[in-house]
Image (tube, rainbow, N blue to C red; front, top):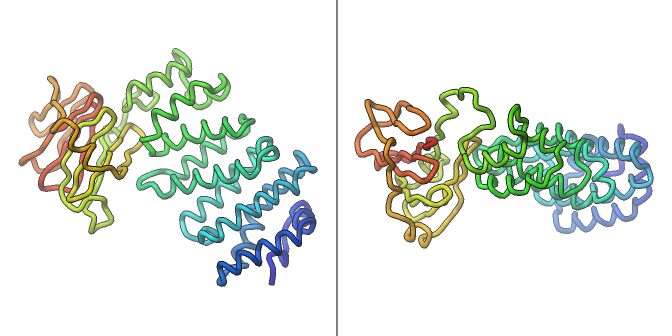
Length: 339
């Protein structure tokens, strides 16, 4: 049985597969030698549901490039197969959704540089999908909307990085926003809609104010603070109640014998593995500025007043230039609020 015994695919994909049949058979044979349990049914399904929509769009846009694009699709599909990412698990389904919904919208770039574009989009989706508390569906939706405006791999990468930040990868914020300065007015206005000073001013404000969401409208209470961490025995990150020290961006965290760099903003939070040197070199506790503190069961900062939902005993308040953190020797969680 081969992947070419596939029905219900378009004439465009059928012709492209037949044109390079010996090449594809050789690639499948090589993969099967490394992966004896190779799932041909999964390959057929992916060809039909994820590759065929690309073939049909490319055939209309530039029929002479269809065969070349399908070669890149086939090669990337085999990489996914080797990493067990052609199944029905969450990661596989999100990657498939990106191929189905985003790649056809990027046809002008895809016809010029299919291998690089397919690999980048696939890796971006997988990176977001494997980041806790991220929103991969939001990234796919955003890319689907903006993709028709993009005509280069560089633009795709810049927009994709901004959307990854907005989908919960807080550590991408500074790099993504600095890259966004190079966007055209058309793309920038779509990415950073503004009623006042223009999209460039929005980019600069996001850089200055991590907790600004892009609107001055009142935010719901649940978006004003972020809860991070949990006990490692319950699929969390912390083996012991965390201790914090302020960093220029985010906080250094020690839990048990493990060190982390915690970065959070209005769109999400991430815990990145770190080391003892960073934690030891940091100030023992971020100085608490005037106007920030506990009062009547609430945390008061310059940005608002919020009820503290954890036992008040022995709470520790750590601050950097833009964020106030609450931790406790009796909890595996950290609570972060805009300062």
